Length: 100
Image (cartoon, rainbow, N blue to C red; front, side, top):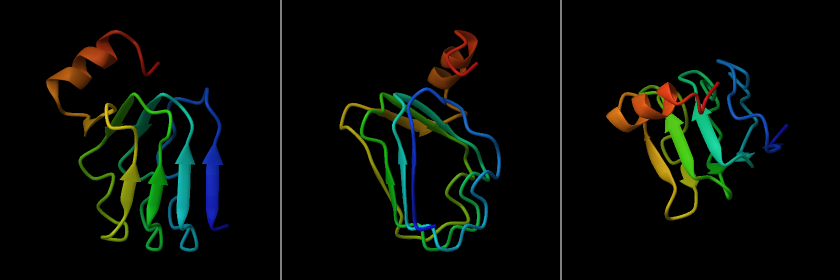
């Protein structure tokens, strides 16, 4: 398994779902709103590319990219929000129920 593409409509992905997929090199989210849990890609040492072509909001945990290859790139539209879940704006998003 070297490439995975998740279809639109899933929105939230559980912790550790692709943990330690050491052969994974490329990952694609097709949703507009994406939340990346802290251990979603943990141990994916060969992952070099995360594509989010339809993203409007990408929210990540402070540790989401901690145990990955240091050269991983997140490709997204230039106007997509890309920030830590601890930001004030993301608290507002959660209050509105966007991630439920």
